[in-house]
Amino acid sequence: MAGFTAIKVMGRGRLVEDLSVIAERRKTLLAISKANDDSKTEKMVTQFLDGTRFFPRRLFTILAHDEEVAKIVETIIAVNRTDNKVGDGKIFVLPISDVIRVRTGETGDAAV
Image 1 (cartoon, rainbow, N blue to C red):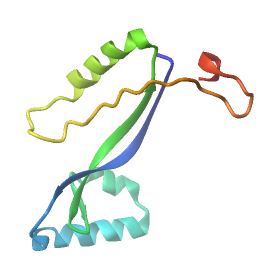
Image 2 (image 1 turned 45 degrees about the horizontal axis):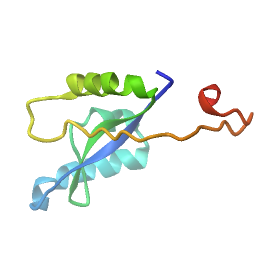
Image 3 (image 1 turned 45 degrees about the vertical axis):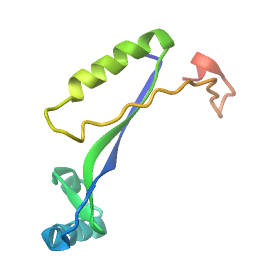
Image 4 (image 1 turned 180 degrees about the horizontal axis):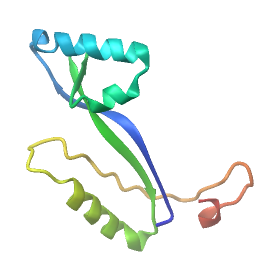
């Protein structure tokens, strides 16, 4: 594997029609957000803001050689697939034509 990065993100869920169901969670989330307490937001299974559900997610950026892509995708699917009908994630596979390290001007694998 040539490179790997993982960051916390919030993924979008389904729209909630009955706002009374989420009113208390919305207040809690807004209070936590104002306090900048990320540890509490991580513990919440679902969080609500403006009628839309958000779920704790991870965003992975993986740079890999072409011959490694299939194995990486298979592994990600095997680890993350659940019996839920929705919410297991998405995988986007994109070609990278070049990488340039700004500080040194290195390109290609040397820049990663």
